Length: 117
Image 1 (tube, rainbow, N blue to C red):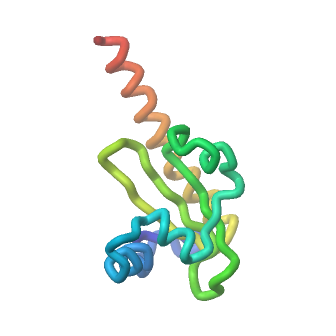
Image 2: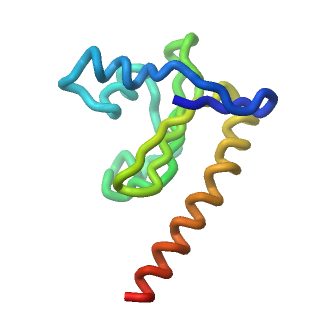
């Protein structure tokens, strides 16, 4: 898993979600997120209707002081899923600024493909 800090930039972070899922094979990433206390309160629609899940979801946790405060689910396509972590708001904002152009490019590409068909 990758982390981002606005001062020191990219760093490799322990993949606690993968470790949890390997230790609990009957559970998935969403179960691991709940177990670690990550909630997506800012994404109320996503919690009410999972089919509306967008390419970026920000989770915040306050239960485990040893874990990063913010976790970002980057889901730009059905075949690719990545998680990133950030410790503070400036880092989160900068990470979102880096990911957003990728999503915009994906949307434009999808629209071009649909128009060509």
